[in-house]
View 1 (tube, rainbow, N blue to C red):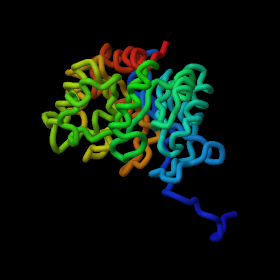
View 2 (cartoon, rainbow, N blue to C red):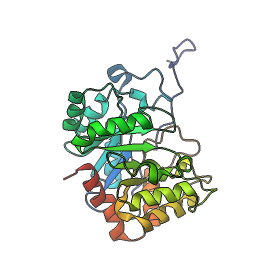
View 3 (cartoon, rainbow, N blue to C red):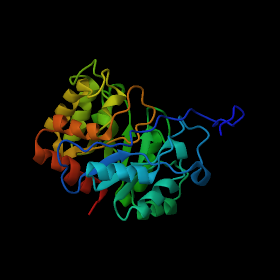
View 4 (spheres, helix red, strand yellow):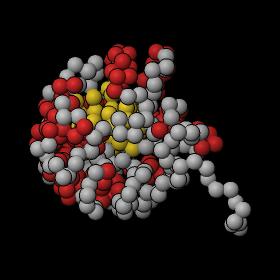
Length: 297
């Protein structure tokens, strides 16, 4: 029985949860298809929440995520540590361990981590670390460069979340970066500026150099339209035309901090048919490229 005296959750507001009634995509995803961007959370009582987190996650957990992957026909995935749990990466380490080889991870770390701590994460299935230059969570650019020198021996890469038009010389800035880099969500392009904008063209240059990658993911983060986010399609087409071997795809489950209608994950998978019409190229983006970048067997 509810009561007006019940204690309300403390901290940032709880995000809306994903649509758990996942629709099957309109086309069959190839065997070995990989979701390269998702967040998995653990119970607060077990893993704790960071006091400075930007949001409180919805009550969905690893089993919900794996169920969504099964509904889509996706065999493998990469989970990205969220600022919700801070730099305590046990939530993704445990998820990887429970997945039977199905998952890899991207950690959230700072410069205080020891070399032994880095080696432990690598042994657990972590393949890189994230620097969020949008929300300013995790290590920032200069620290990421220093950490990149330390993780180079592990074969890791650095994953950046950034607004690409704030980095019109990104290809030059990252040309001598110690490790390969991955740019989240197509660089969060600005539909008002178009594919010819300096930052987006710098992203294309970075991918063409072979030193960088990008994720075809999360169109709703910068789209000015309702689903299916048609104003983001030209950016996806430009990236696919320029550097198909440097792209992976991500679902961005469970779509936290989303302003607007919650998409069904089957509909998000269907965007691939519009973004990457050629089935052979889709297989490279969904299967071959993730295997190369994350070390899936």
